[in-house]
Length: 371
Image (cartoon, rainbow, N blue to C red):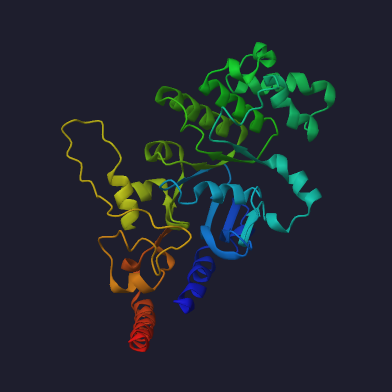
């Protein structure tokens, strides 16, 4: 298994993402990103394991487009976003923003880049300071990074608030005086005020009513056209992702299992996990018979994931190779990537067969020793 793990993501990066950061069309390129959280022992505080929150993720986002990142709760979506923004330190990998590797920047260089990469948090209730009026909350970053001259800050904040559907008289009010939808508009205005190129939307509508969700989604789309913004939109709501995204990445237990244009993924999902997710999307037709794919079992622990393909314990199409070898994340169709042994080439199947044979021989030897 160790042999296979070393080449899986390297091959993916080499074929699908070689020199992607040099292409001026790509604003953000993520290569082989890992983020492990150490598990400490109770007494001596020694590291006894790792929670593999992000386990080799790679993708790219073109300027002015939106990438949707979907998956079950706990699959590592938010950790990917926070690590990209350097709110978490990576374990391994590279993140390129405008051709610059983010983790190679010094503190002063990162501070200069900060206004260009912003985040809208999931919870509009806890992400706003209750002690500051709205005008101060939006103007705080503008003043800190000197986005506009000091005497123009007030007018600038007013323009940003109008763009986000807020009124000038809201400036003197406090967050507790607003509804959830209005608070999320304030969070969007706070991010937009720093004149960013890229905004990470971390489940920005999951805490809102359905009618308000549509308003916020439409606001994000209008702002994208107006200011040429690029989004990474993290969500578990597939209908929302289909509506707002240009490309979609599907995550399972720290890995990206499928990635392509939204139309391709929704019209022809390749990975068994993606098919199961899409089969659960409700259809507004009482006579429509849904062909649900029920996933058996529960999600394995990210601190002790299954060997081989992490999805094999719940997959109806599981083969022997899935239990021993992690699948390559490969380009099955033009610009349609998938990590599944169903799409291996004949040469790769032969290589995997040799690994399976070797692993089985080791298991047999170990059992003989135990006896």
